[in-house]
Image (cartoon, rainbow, N blue to C red; front, side, top):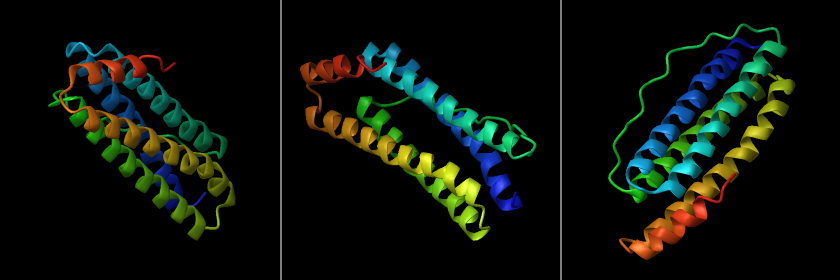
Length: 161
């Protein structure tokens, strides 16, 4: 496996685990703000990010590479509002998309077809992740300070499994 591709994928495990930690921190904030639906949605998202980390973990091991786990940075714990939370979610997903794209470009340059095929799933997933984050941000922005609107979004988000 190309060294640059390997290093980027190994780093991506850390990025995905940070994502899980970040979303879990947001979930905790939403719980403390009495927004259980937002909290539940973010907690499910945290679980998905852990699954993404494990996909990279397994892929590297399947390719005969050593997985080297690094320290996970502490995420922020305070947020101004649900809108602030989802602005940060959307920005974060855009950052993850850029990271995945950079790994794909390295795999393409290295003619590492197996990695390119593997990364296709993540590219598709990131389109979906950005779409969901953008959609929720749009809803939260539209309702503004309306308690009823926020309650409706909270209720809807709480249905995510």
